[in-house]
Length: 367
View 1 (cartoon, rainbow, N blue to C red):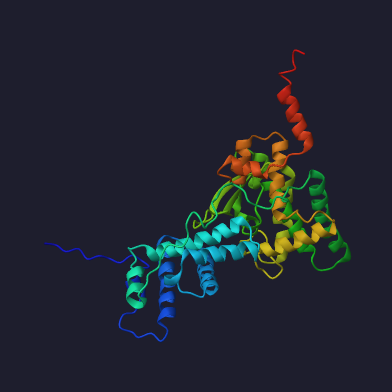
View 2 (view 1 turned 30 degrees about the vertical axis):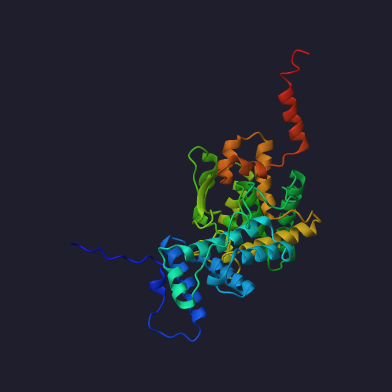
């Protein structure tokens, strides 16, 4: 008879716990072993550190809040913590649900019989972990969008003022012969690219020069006919999603072409792959994009509810007003569902009135 040896799964208790060693603080040692095991389990599923690390930090914060160890946690702990996130920290529902989901994942890992953490805790402390996150004490995902209701796109007039102001900063820096002209030119082009291709802030910061390519159906754009977005918004626990965005605005193509060929080389880092580089040869970070955006917005006294993401909203809204096919816009923006594209669309009153007239025209044709 052939006996098959059972192989422990990555993250199993017997792989993380050191047998025969007396721990000075056995509770802390068990908790640390649990986190190591959870990390190993997530790694085996292909998750990266940038996903795992925030989850681990959240579990440690939950431990501090409860002042109890995972094998002592109960649904009441989840109730109290969720109430504090809402009533004291005033976090958005989507953020609270994300936090609750991470704690749920950790506790479900602990109570999964395949990993052996329940028996290990039972043997060491006489109790075992239980499920603490249930339908009645966590937020359900009831709607597609839970963002700030004040969020909106730029009007066309606001956007023109913003982009003109960004260009003016370049002219002022050049005229005064002060430092910062290259950075101002870079940033002015960057905002045009966000709008011209409907990008998110992080997607924009991670662009490389080689991400632009030719589109045989739009030869007039040369090597800037399409943009390969390699760091699109990821689904939770998954790698960034890629998409190709076709160029549709000739003036935006002209702006980025001029920047790449005439301005970027003057930064002096020819081997750096990034499209947006700093004076010191680093990659421009999303926080820097945000800082420059806020400086320009506030200088123009534009509403505070306008944020960098509003430029992306404007891309979807303005293409919709211009009569571009909805499915095409959805693909360009990288939305899986049309409902997501609808959230981004805040068309003007003129557009709505025109659409209404078209809808009513057949009914009143014979009147």
